[in-house]
Length: 456
Image (cartoon, rainbow, N blue to C red; front, side, top):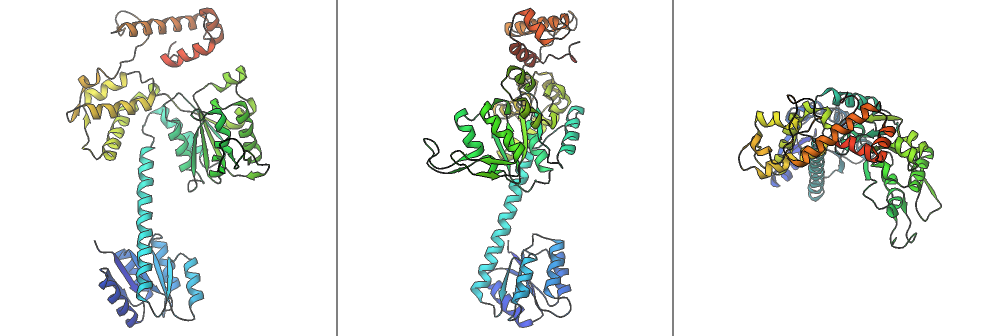
């Protein structure tokens, strides 16, 4: 498809000269002899590029540029200037013109400017497409009351610079919440830097976060800019913040308090303007009691705490999530979308989903790859999706375990709920009575989805 170029100039000879050059190179050319006519054509025809004379009677090029930019700020405009109007052309460039060319027009200069302008437009369009793709991939999907509560918290937190602490089990989508806060904040045009504190070895995390100078330790062959510096003016997301060592916690606290970092091997402090969003699947108050997490850092991080609900608390969102993952997988792999039957969509919310949304996404992808037909039905799910085991109530409403493992899990869950009731849901006392460490009991509560609200 030919690129369309609009030439706006009151001199017929300039228009004719440009038309000859452009049409010879295969461009589609439209002409306008006045500023108002050029503005109207720009709005109606939406060209790929405009050549605009700066000095015209009536509406001059500067005013025409302002009107064109107001209507379409991404449309590249190249200013044509005569001798004595270069300063005005520079002013136009500051006002958003892509470039300016002096008369008389040299063919090579014109063609080079066009190529640069169209390449930049193509790159901008690609960036937009990639950004949209990233946003779709990191989209929060659902309409449940539990998720709406999270959205309300995001709307309140986003416009501020307050530190946010995201709490929730592994796989619930804490990263999606962090990205939503950044995307809706005043820092949205700046960088979003993500650091998984649990995935970086303890001996390297300080260098990763704060950077280091060349030769500061064995293996430091080059200077490294830390993640906090990279996130300057933007947002840093510290995932699994509960896994940081005490030494690293102290340095992160300094960044929050003083707004400055110090690279390893350097005595110079560097000012940074960073918004911090942290996330953890640990009970940090429990970690404070155990002496593994700093209380002062906890208070700094949890200015706005947001609890992200597990999938079992938003089961009504599962059909929407499944459709979203099907669309996403089909687009990314250029496949025709398969569909889940109504019976399959009714079956999926009954599963345990201990891995939450992450497990659901992986399961959907596995089903799409391994199911040969166009429709995925209940029979395709039975060997992959395990139905949730609930605490036994009576012979009539009990879901009977189908395997020895499911029977053991069902019995263990019922035993724990009974002991918690006997001890008025006091975790420490219950752990002592049943002879297990409190940390192990916490893990069991998370594993079986036991809570005082759901297991009264």
